[in-house]
Image 1 (tube, rainbow, N blue to C red):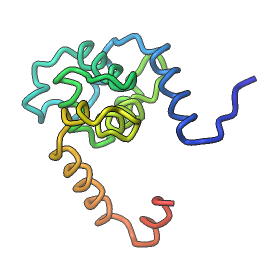
Image 2 (image 1 turned 90 degrees about the vertical axis):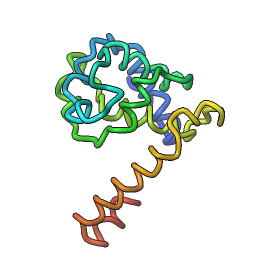
Image 3 (image 1 turned 120 degrees about the vertical axis):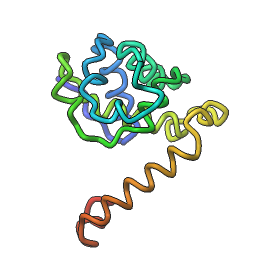
Length: 144
């Protein structure tokens, strides 16, 4: 019988534990990402090392520079989800990594400086762009 989670934090903790247990760090999710070719910090990055860095963020410890660069450019295309041979939602893995890097998962403030203000601004731009494609009612529904 599976454990029923009652809070968002419990859900995230369960997701993190499952991801850390099942991820083989093969890098297929990174390789499938269409945004990596557009980042100076990722064009020659090792997929396995980059994924390992994201997993470090899930552990609430700073990841490597490549993982920070990937967290910054992810636009949630979802191509990484189908690429994962372990069936992990890699898009969610990256999103939770972003949350950790920005301090949303109780990560010490000095560690969140690695992702920086520009990434936070980037996410605001992405949300604003999404807003141009949805009605006010749709945005309100998704924000609930």
